[in-house]
Image: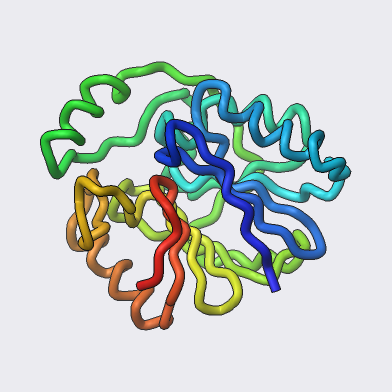
Length: 212
């Protein structure tokens, strides 16, 4: 069974995840100095960094891949992304998406044109990707909607590390829908897909885990 460790910044509004089984997979680097929190977790808990096998970036937005190159250099492991987002990582820019509320509109004005560290991904996918070779029993799925190049990770058969497909915030109450949506049709298709997969627990990139 895969254990999920959530590492948070900004009062839980920016999350990275460690998927821990035979090996360890890091999901997202956060932004600013958040990457140091990931490194410190390994140092403070005396976890051998060679157990890390892969870094997954759920999409190309500032708060998910800023300073991911620092993690790659420290852990010396490949980075996996959605092929549809590859050009954004290579050029150090944010993927396009549309805000769906006033707060999201304000956030977009702040971060959208921010230039980021360029990343040359090692693995790009456009279909289901099995993680068993990286020591975790799970799959990565392209889940466009929030952005064209979004990914989600399915573990333990009914748990999902969802990127920004969901947001667990007091500002959107029980809805938990994304604050930014690039393609509404794709977004709803992937929300329905998770329901068809009988996903019960969601680990969103913003806010606490919740039960569907």
